[in-house]
Amino acid sequence: MNLILDPWLPIRDTAGRTFSVAPIDLPNRSDIVELAAVRADFNGALAQFLIGLFQVVAPADSDDYEDVLVGRSAFPSTELRAWSKHFEFDNGGARVMQDLAVDVEPLDLASLLIDAPGGNTLKNNGDLFIKRQISMPMSLSVAAQALICLQINAPAGGTGYRTSLRGGGPVSYLWWPPSVADQPVPLWQKIWANVMPISGSARASVCLPWTAPCITSEGGRDALTTLSKLHGKLSEREKLLLCYFATPRRVRLDFVEDVTCSFTRERGPGVTSYRTQNLGANYLSQHFRHPLSPYYEFKGDFLPQHLTESGFTYLDWPASQRSHDGHRAPLIMEKAYRRSIERWLGARHQMATWAFGYKMDNMKCEDWHEAPVPALVGYPETVRADLLGSAQKLVDAAAAARKALSRALRRAWTDEGKKGETLVAESEFIAATTNPFFDTVEKFAPQLAATEAATAERNNLKAQWQRGLKHQAIRCFEAHAEAGDVRGESLKVMQRIAKAHRQLILDLNSEVPKAMGIDPSPQAAKKPRKVKEAA
Image (cartoon, rainbow, N blue to C red):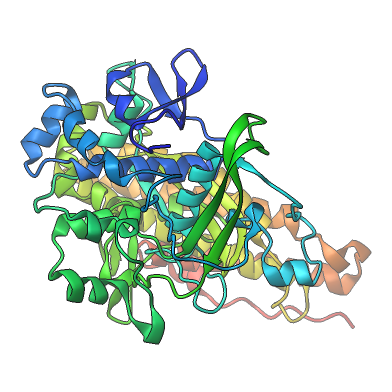
């Protein structure tokens, strides 16, 4: 099976039908609009793999790139077809994302999945919620999806088992508009929107690791240094392609002629087991800037952002749209690469991006999150920067209110005020303030002029936002405070709740405006009076 020329890619068309196509045929099918893998995380991995394929043939000139995007020029299918010899999956001496030199005992294919229980979990019978599988044969298509997903997202896996180029379970933001000018956007166009025009040549032996002897990491060697010693300085195109095709895990699949796929129930050639070995290529995150990921500064380096328990919320939104203060937005969202996208999208305030990623706890996969995300499209760069700056102030205020809510609930629940899981209440608070947040950002847009009336309206919007945060934080507190031992309704417990409630109000009145750069009123800044303890 060839991953460029053969029909293995699961898709959905405008009529809702699902079937498989060859990636090379996507640009000729305007009716194909979405990926349709058997798992949501496979869809995310496939989108990135396809971006990598299209990036191989991306032009250096931004005008040439935009001509393909909007249909003025044909997609470079001939150039992509020329690379197909490097994308054999189940035959030949070089197989996509595999190391044929691995010769160890086979493992069950189920453990190829990111969320499969690990060795220690199985040994200790700890697979309570994510069950072990005795056998999980896969068709060639599903096996390819699973392998691509592992290499792109590889978590920590024990001594010498390397993580992905962005660490375990990275966050990705893609341009992914459902429609443009009231017409469904074809899948190929969504993929091309995430390709970047870039100069430089690309050598297969550098940017497609399976086409050369496997780079290993004994003695702490890192992949970029080793590649530079072997091939000289890498071009920017080669470094960019490694972001999509890096293979940190040494894997060899065991192919058979006839299986029934555990996922699709289709019968035919497939995979029943795989072999893996440690000390694969060590792609240090600080050596690359993946174009789909936001980064944060840590000890002088910029590292890829990862998800928290809350998943994708508006608290992360400004940082995903603009680089500032120790944060880097995804490269594809930056102004140098978004001009063509904005001209193509045209209208403002579209849910034009798709965010996804795993919530990981070291090597343990805890959850998968994905969400459509708005993008500020159609504004001049200075207006967009001002809007995102204002949005960040709103986010800072919400984060302060969320923190105050969490503290208050712990104070209400225990005498020490330190115990208790407040994630449910925090999630409710975020959900209740999400739509008001984006409504407020939208209302800020016409009020950015340096006039007295605009300034007054901005201050009014800030005051409304503060009142809304205070209201929702208090509502969530009241809904969750009476938990645990408060059911006994002793006088001491009720006093504890009342004291926590009063302190929450004072914290909200003080910390929320401070987070927005507004001095809290003297009344709000007063210290709470001491509440007498029960006799």
